[in-house]
Every structure is written in structure tokens, then in C-alpha cells.
Length: 301
Image (cartoon, rainbow, N blue to C red; front, side, top):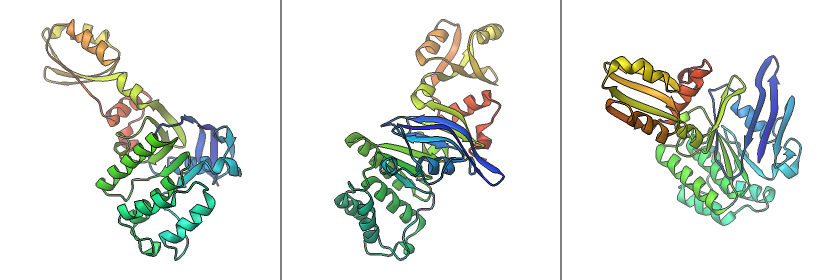
């Protein structure tokens, strides 16, 4: 388990991270979402032990990660701009990673290189951004660490490659103890892979929830009431998050389980009623609006 306790970090007069508290459970995919400058990279670097917190602690399996080799061997950190040695080839990097990570899987490393279409003896400096990102992901997976910290992992990858990487993550989680932590500015990239999502805004955690819990406890309902004079009375009996109207059609975002909402409207006099699934984007929009924020501005500009 990774635990952030009141993590705080400033650079000069700029406070990049402000008292971040969160728990990343083992064998789950944790998504850290936020705009550029929200503090995602700084949080990941403190967890990885690259940066020392000004205040608070980043704990990896109960051990502070900064200046602690026993914690760091459990982590592999992929930065937004992966670093490789000057004039190095993938083969050179394999020798280096093998010396650092005792369980580094050389056979799988070269297998992945072949499958990703990367040449082991070509200089990495000639690789495109996407190819460098692919190489860093391959190295991170083959290091066989318990935790893989990914900063904008899918940025620079084409859609097919993104799905391929997500599939590899899922397979690794089936085969061994493996916990990916993925930071991204794009909520849509994380919807189909994450178990838990945290929203970082202006250096602090605005919202942190299990994805399944979020999806189970909020519903979208489209309905047309037979007697519209009873609309106000009906809405008062619901825990409403949002109400929209187009003519006689009501679109409601309502708290409660799907079964509860279906049973509620089944007992009402409606001409039409349908309970629809919400996307992760719609859920976060609804949840953050409660706190006075508009996630469309926070995440999508």
C-alpha cells in the first residue's frame, strides 16, 4: 500500500502540492487526474522518492520512500519525459536496469521490444516521443516492481497502442502483485482501466473515490411524467444532483442505486422512463459541481 500523509511541496514562492492525503491500495489501478500544473508530477516524484516533501510523508508499504533504498526497489517511475543515457540503445538500458532491479525479466524485455517494433541496437535518441514512451513502459513492466508510477503514460501513444498497454497492465495484475498508478490530464483515458480515481486541483485532492462506488451510487434518469403537475412533489422525494428539461422530457442525475431508482419510478405514473449509465466524465462533473467546481474547466479547459 502507498500512503500520502499531508504531502506538501513548494518551489520558491509556488506551492505545488498542498497537504495531499490519499491511500493507494494494492492490486488496484489508481488514476490521478488533474490539469497541467495541478501537482500530479510532483506527487508522483515524492512517492517515488525523487523529491523530498517539505512536509508530510510518502509511505511505500509503511516505509518513507525518500532516501530509502528498501522502498525504492518496490517502485519504477516513468516520468512524463522519459530519461535515457546519452547515445544509449535499448540493449544498453537493459544492462543498466538489470543491475538495479534484481528481478528484471530480460527475456520478456526483448520479447516486448520485438512486439512493439523497437530495435534493440538503435540509438534511443533517434526514437520518436511515442517510441520512447513505449520503451519506458516496457522497462517498467520488466523491472517486476510491485508499483509502477506512470506520469502521462498514454500521452504520445496512438489509440491502438494505448489499448495494448492497458491490456498488458491487466495481464500483469492477473499474474503477479502489481499496482499501476497513472497520472493523466485526460479523464477519458482512465475510465476503462482504473479502480480508483483521485482528482487533484491546485495542489490538493478535490475528490478521491472508488470508481465502482461512484458508478453504483449515482444514476441518470430520462423520464416523461403522465401528470406534470406532480413533478415538483416527485423531485422533492429524490436526492437530486442535477435537473435538465427539454419540453416534457426530464433528465435527472440522482443519487441512489440503480435498483432503488428503477423501483422508485416503477411506482410512479410515467409515460416514459429509462435509467442510463453515466460516463466517468459525467459523474465527476456532477460530483465536483457540488463543491462549486466545473470539471470541464478543470480537466478539459
